[in-house]
Length: 119
Image: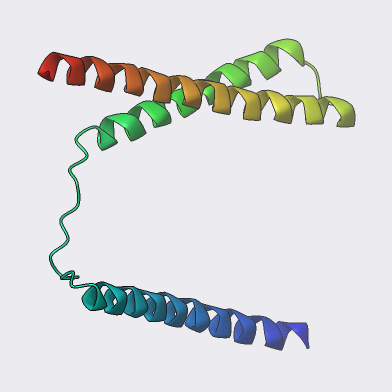
């Protein structure tokens, strides 16, 4: 019974998601037209440092994974017990978020320095 319902629910859910997005997008454009704004003439602001930000974030996440791997292998060099597995997972998540955050901070410092030079 469940094997039959899963594809049906997935299909209906995907259809509802796409329909909802299109409906809300149309509603937003109609509200813009009512206020006198041309919905087709929106220019996005340039984001010159977006790739730098994501690049440094990914480098930070990669470094976090490597540091976590070496930390877990160094601290728990034998087979992990159940209680140590939870600690190893915490080391992985902590390292990922710490080094990812450091990557974003480095990105901010580079952007700030560049913008200060432009002024």
